[in-house]
Length: 162
Ligand code: THU
Image 1 (cartoon, protein in one colour):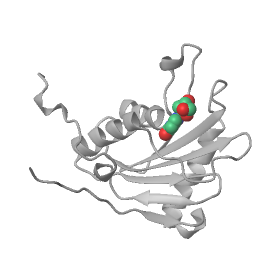
Image 2: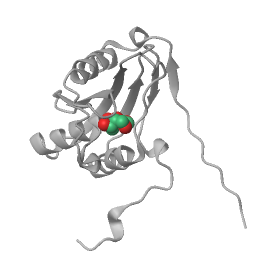
Image 3: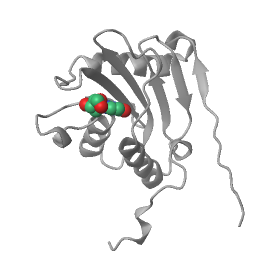
């Protein structure tokens, strides 16, 4: 038996304005995206914005449904839109933010496991690290330079029949 340890580093910014203008701009895009959130069930509005290697910015917001599992997170709405509109173009970064009714989510919002899995597959297929920028209602930011660190012991589709 051996015990193994996995750790990762991420950066914490007190305010989004401490980031470089490109990253700060992507947070602004995510904040714009929040406005199109359809979240009448959770009242938890999430916005995401993806920056592609060709410079394009793609927005997404969470879209819920009365048949609950039919909804989709903001991150995957943006990532799948990017994949559909610009197939084969690498993703450089994704920013995520949140808006609640009473500003109760002060800390940065972090992507759920399913969204991490989707981000990681794009990171792998494009052989290009995706920077994940997480923003909260208190304007604090967490930033990490790749998705791999956010999803250790990843499930890979390598062994599935193609
Ligand atoms: N949600 C996201 O859009 N992204 C996340 O990272 C976490 C959760 C959405 C899903 C659902 O519409 C609402 O937030 C509450 O879970």
